[in-house]
Length: 140
Image 1 (cartoon, rainbow, N blue to C red):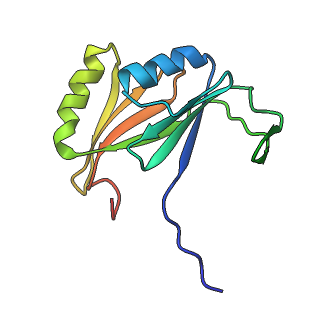
Image 2 (tube, rainbow, N blue to C red):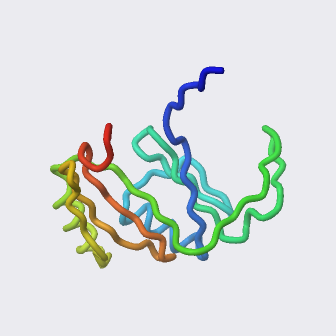
Image 3 (cartoon, one colour):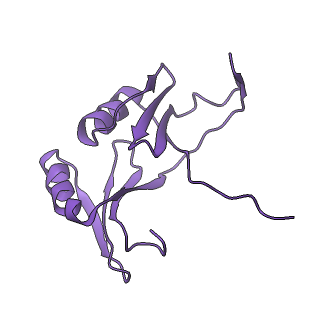
């Protein structure tokens, strides 16, 4: 049997303790538009390529019935990691923007393939990264 083709990652989910505080960060500091918001989650459009979902931690531990069907329970704890791809010429503007907004750069990496990463945390302690592409992973 032939493996079907994988297109891309559609959604990435982070779980947060304070949805309003997280929304202020992802909308205000990260500049992400919100196509959907309710009392248990926010959905953010990431350049029409993927969706970042923020769920209130513990708020998705029971099934949710919608007009479209049933969403099974899911949740996570601890500090999760995700990376945003940026163009090489955007590394320094991102560094300046984050610093100006009081976000501490917790680390940097200069990758063998030529990419560069800045690491920082959101208000819930999730490790975020902006990484220049190409140059981080083969093919990216």
